[in-house]
Image (cartoon, rainbow, N blue to C red; front, side, top):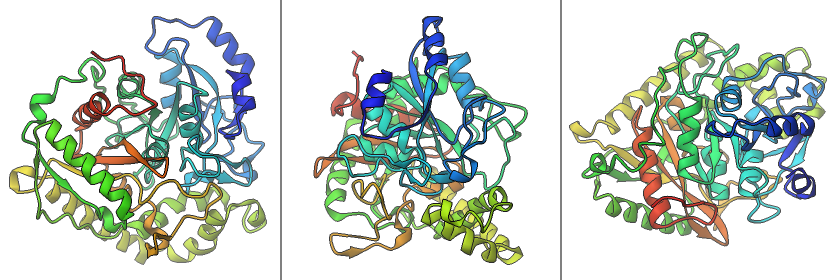
Length: 439
């Protein structure tokens, strides 16, 4: 495995811990859920004694003093073997994995294209066959975006499902932890192992279990569910050619589960991209305040831009506006997902505006001659982060030999239904990376 990682041109790993992993593998308890399974750890998640760089040159010599709960549970309760750190975008701030510290990470389906971000290294490593599973975090789409770009399952769970501890700051309350995997079963097992309350994080959720064992048992609950198919979710502009493929996949999924497509539901949402960016940049400013502006040349263009612009934007007026807009979003999302009052049970949309773009960026603002706007990337995924509800990216085919992802968004605590919808696609239209062992 390490030979394959070292020979790979994906640049999916920033740090390898071979000796520790070999000892762990030799002593693995294979009766545990992930006993002996090699996994990658996203660079932004901590492992005690490993680099704690935030994917930034400024912190290249910093070492973690604790291990994050997502990783610790996968290792200790799950028995997984920690292979090393997978590359991420700097501070998780952008949907492309290219940093000054680590260079550029590539998409296994086409070198020179991005695997997305910020969990891009995990996406590349798992889709590229270097490891079986890897951790991910989603604060604005950072699990779903790369899952869509590389043809894997990416579940962003209800906020608080897996605690962000230790020393978790609530901040903008948009980030959730999880994994990226090739199969629905692997993702269900991950959450069975890693979810559950931690008293150090007051908004973490009580433990649930049985997601893997319950796969395929919710089909009666899905029958008759109301579904909206929305091409412009979050005011995004989606590639028309890609949308043709995704709409067909959505219609097939609705028919497979005998659900009901509902047209005419008002799914308009207040634009939240700028508010999300400002809110999530406050922590960045705090981390870099002692190094700025001397560190300017050590930062990626996106993080440098944030440091130059956000401090002047954030104050009482900005905070008031942010809270108002977020309240508007919460009201709108609650209305949309109130099926009993004429809303819907699920929204089906795209995971990304288009197929994977250039690995070195910048984020595209046009496709097919259509100007989409620089903030287009992420608009499809932001709403679920701000509202805290779950959403899943499901592989839905290929365009120009690159994967495309179908995103299904549900109300809070609907993860098991989302997993069964993904399982339906996996059974009926399996994607190349899945290992389909179901009968």
